[in-house]
Amino acid sequence: MSDFSSSSSPKIIAIANQKGGVGKTTTSINLAAALVKNGCRVLVVDLDPQGNASTGLGIDPEKRNYTTYDLVLGDVDLHDVIQTTDFEGLWISPATVDLSSADIEMVSNEKRSYLLHDALRQPAIDDFHFDFILIDCPPSLSLLTVNAMVAADSVLVPLQSEFFALEGLSQLMLTVREVRQTANSKLRIEGVVLTMYDQRNNLSRQVEQDARDNLGELVFQTVIPRNVRISEAPSFALPVLDYDPTSKGSQAYQALALEVLAKKGR
Image (cartoon, rainbow, N blue to C red; front, side, top):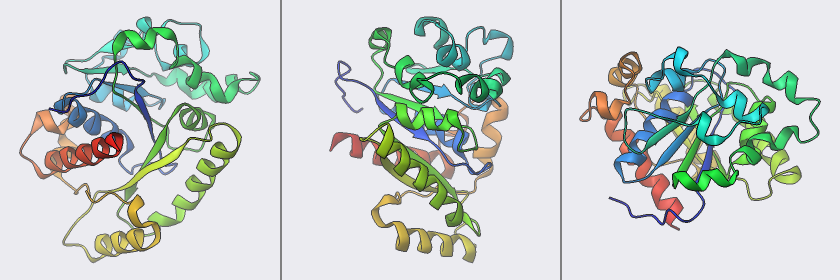
């Protein structure tokens, strides 16, 4: 079990990639669960209008009375938004389709890029003693994603092991650079994690080689395999670590959590 001083501020990680279907939500849920297994207290902020992280952690739509939308655009207390999950040490700020209109509503707000930053720094956040806050971003470089980057200490990028994977990464890196120059000078890249990796597939190995050649130490040593258990777990509203703790997918997310913890400890 890792021992953290809960009096310090939580580390906030935005999990982002403007491409859909690369494993953002899967990584948000399972990295959170793996950090919890290591003794951390973790909040998942569901910032995707699809609300898949909320569903994947067992929050029924009718129980999402207050959501991340209210946190960002309403004057709603953190205690009203943040919900416990069935997993001790893991909380969620749930999402609904309401978030899909948030970008339009934010535009007229002069603090539009800082709304999530300010919401996650309400004094009430200290009551929860979180070690980590993971933000599951929508699949776009929208104002919501910019809010996540302004609020975050770092950005973790899931990268699908497929052709053209690295091409979309350049636009994301440009956005990170812009946010760093204009709104959050401390923002850095937490790392790039290869997802849906198939060891038997030449393409997966080539994408990994290209990523490591181009990005060096930014690429996590851990790769997340294409694993049926990872795919099945959300339909049971479980992280793969609880659904099948011995699966390769579960072991991979545990290894990723250890890498993230090692970076926090530096």
